[in-house]
Image (cartoon, rainbow, N blue to C red; front, side, top):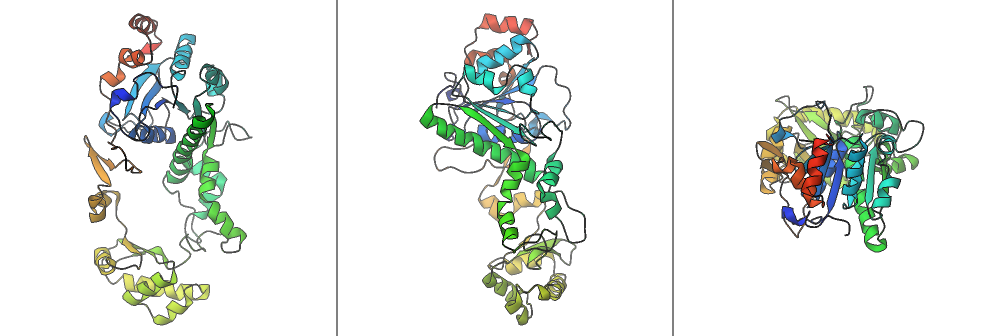
Length: 395
């Protein structure tokens, strides 16, 4: 890859697949910081640029728990000043990626839109993430995960029959349709750059990203295998063999035996009357099947059922809490959760056979010092001091 400041990637000692790559993250909330965290843990050197006059964030976390800062150098910069915008252009001239999540037009008003930045660095990948995309009648509107899911038709599909739609945390539009699609887009653009030498703009929209995640559902609906009604389908709690059930201790198990051979195993071990096995996909049998499953599962505790089905392919799992998941034997064996300082968190993912991945640590004092950061981008001490004195840089 071209464009990285000399030594910026190597100075961290990172060995992931993106080691040597330099990323500029324009600070924001939600999916862009998650994307930056993951890029950092894949080996990239990430510089987070924050507003010099930024107020207190909506969710203020102690630094040891604030993953929006972990794994980065942090530079506070007044981008509303011409000297601040010019400095960012100079940094971008030596970067591989720039990612931002502002509403359309914000970067352009600062004089930092992709046309200007790509003039300075034609090899740069300029990743943009918004809820509605860079154009269209809703592009200037504010929103959150629940907003984008509503417009994508997905919120309507999540929940039980005759009950209101249920927000699936902020995992689908923000993190899946947002952060993951942004990462996929910028990495695809980097691959194309490796052949063409040219950068480009990636326009990632959370509505479109979330909709893409649901592409198979649209195909099922077109073929008549899915109805546009909540809680009546195979994967939305409509099918009794793909749902959760309350146990004797008021906890829950998840039943997911979709394939006939798995359902037959489930029916044998529950046990469930044999006539249900032959009518698994007969919707007229589903109410009686659901009642029979619910009655049986209510007879034992969650952990008793977990043990009962543990060595089988019946696709039954205990519904663990977020805290319980960290201690499950499989997750412990895989070291799927790690301790990073005082934070228990998911381990970096995905895994790679070459190079080690270390959870991003909270920034050190050196990671916040403008002099050390800007020196890596080729600025001299005197120039850095002048920018700091002028208020372009904040300590």
